[in-house]
Length: 432
Image (cartoon, rainbow, N blue to C red; front, side, top):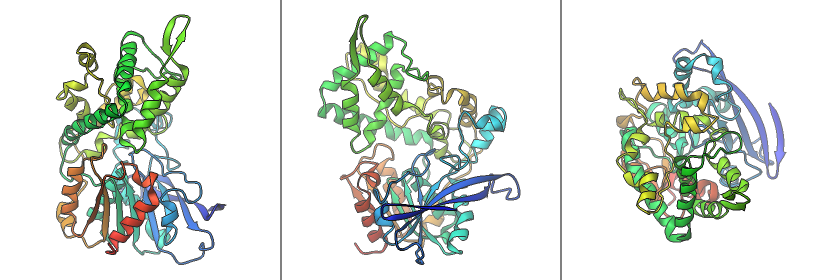
């Protein structure tokens, strides 16, 4: 273990070994990484543990500097473990460079199927006794981390002292089709709100889409910016300042050159930074699999359901002189054609989309008998996680206390994390 300091905290890098397949504990092992954080002056104190599960899937735990965001509130009473979930960060990362070590597409797909919430929770239960001596710990789950926390409550509640969820209560019985059928109208509302705030962006977005329809545009590194890929910049609209980010990005799109107007280098670089999956490929590869339960395949649900909402079609919008609708948090087969970080994983992704042997992730009966204190922040009209789905789940989990708010968007725990976490801790303890 290596320990070091940042302002107000002491950090310790921890490494763990867990089974790749928990059904075969004596088989192949994975390396997991977690960063322990404790307030300065309390490193020797007997503090309860809090494990943080990041959103995603596919993102390692946030790299904080000092007491940023919610961490400052957490270290007031907890020893925190920032866990890189399997396949992310420093926990045996999976990407186009490492997955070929597993073999061909079929072997890769079978391997990737072991990286959902069920395996992540069993990882937690493997390492928890090593840190706590067997005592239960608190879980803080952001977005997909909340999905993992809900699975934790369904399968191993004995390991939990308290559960805190921010923007991450999943639908217990909805399939991927249901998720996206609820998502597209939500996304449209976000786009319309953006255009109401920045009406000049209607023309700007159309102009960019028209340019891309007429000019093959390859971004630095080989990302092919098609009109549909451009639409996916709408993923920004789910964050607290995302509308403003999108506006500033669009206003700098074109520069005048000797050959006429072209997309500027600055615009292309900014777009690449937003759209590329190079840093988090599992987000694309496993995104629909996080909703998969039972025998049915996901079968590219976002792409299929999008056909039910023709207003999102680029050509239709351009032909009708209508505003271009951006999309958000939807993964499509063409992502694996335009993004060089995903192209080598296309066949594996196709096999995952066709997979039919997904196991259930949640146990409604067990959740209805829950004894663990649970508090959840539910963001009004959250673009990424359907509010009605979340509230229906909240009513299923016995004793869960909700804070429904429109003060924050989906990233509220990052933007104003100390206040959000303080409210949830108070809710869980029955203090408000």
